[in-house]
Length: 310
Image (cartoon, rainbow, N blue to C red; front, side, top):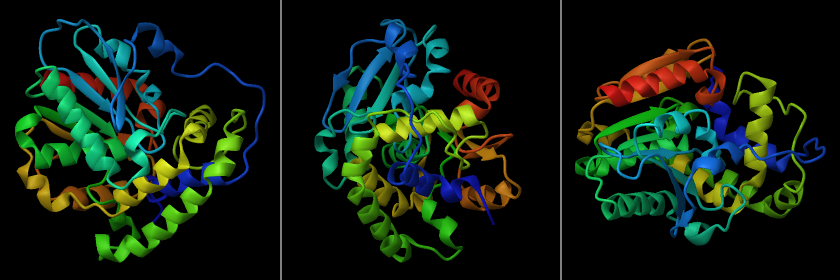
């Protein structure tokens, strides 16, 4: 069965490895956020910028983007959230053309988690909200399951507890490891070519099913073109070989909401079994592929607003 998530990692990798159509440069999508955000603060595995009142009431909201994505993926919602609360925009080092920092070594996801928890501790946040997309969604679940006392509420945006289950119902982290390793080698090997190609933006629709619109697909391709393929390779390997499913019963964060793209037939047949028996509440998003915030911005904004108000 063809699903959006089935091709998400492979498509993001392929758009960097395969030749792309380029034209004259244009303004970066993060410009709007940059106008109202604080200066970037770098840690070993992530960088952070903040929006919203410094003395905002309530806990902050951490927004974690997915594989190869910059914090600009949240541009459509971050300014609105920042009107009433502190918004912490995370970016994985190496995912936006910046220095990869410690992310050239194994343990990318664990390092991201450690940095987020350290930041929360430093700012006195005891029960922050965490919203993560794709790889960021897996990261959010790992934090909520392994550090349940450190998270107040969690939203997962189009991420499965174990991505590898899409390779077959009997898949395990061990069984998918050879394929994940092959993809890691292929992605890392494209580093030099991808770095050269990133000099000029993509302006022609690259196709694929990460977004339902040509504009969305072009934006995603440009984000991915800037990512350091060495970091992408390692993060992708860790994503594919991590199964947080058996640990989700430890999640005490409420609400624990999972938005999933329902733009392809039979999506529920993948998502509902994946979260069966867990505390998660699943919400299907019709008319959307993997980047829900781009395909259904009004639906997404409403879902996040309700999630934070519960």
